[in-house]
Image (cartoon, rainbow, N blue to C red; front, side):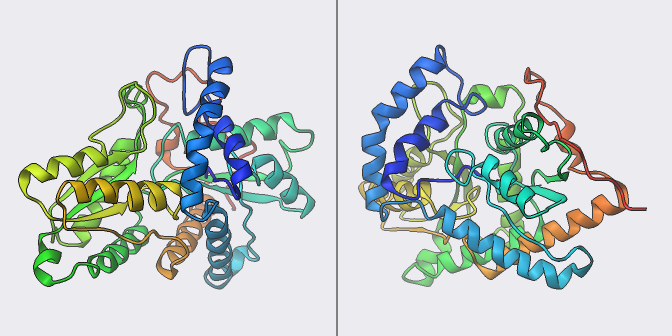
Length: 353
């Protein structure tokens, strides 16, 4: 996944790598402007990280998730054991190149690129897979070193949905009484995207909505709900409505009870710990929302790591029986896509006869 700074001194390089990635952000004169924007934003972002402990916890949670997933996989899929996980972040170490080098040194031959973005976007899952397979093509001996398959999306997997539902039920316990709990509006909040990305045909917004609908279906539509978006940057138009604006607008409807659900984040990081827990909490208080709470993030919960293990098991079984190394949707490039390497796969794994 994207990763996050493991200490304050990594904030600047993290932002530099993020803003210079043309898969996620496109701007005129990007090679010149992006480093300047990253440098300008670094002090304020450092302060946010200070407020949440001086680092992002995403590395620790990703490692815990991987270890628990592989331990269960060894039990439920002994024919493909032993299993080992490698973390490959996009903008901080360990990056994809580091992961590939470790895999080669360990003698790995069969590899699964498991996107930790449940919902596909060219800016996230696409950027990470493009980078990894670019490195495989460019580095000596990497192109044929591993047989690859991709778990490129899993927005409605039943066990993922159950893990989210369990966290929502846990989040609802934070309300002081049954009346406020029953009246609570559930806001599914996901990271926004520039609207021009959606207009190109990116699948992200549809898949986030699909996740939210399946969750509410599992909850038997027990509460009112809405999908909203956070973390927009700059002056261009982004996918909306924005979560903070929704909180302000709820004031006009005299709503006093809100539960925010991080629907596209698999672990806590700055968007949950700072943006939702601190910034949005202040917005909610000013808007007269008496009970503002957030559902726990998936992190290393048993329900979530169990879901991860079963997603991988089902994927491995499908590749072995059909030879299909990715979802069918993976081949459906955005209508306006101009990236020749998008949706590629190097040395795909073969069906086992």
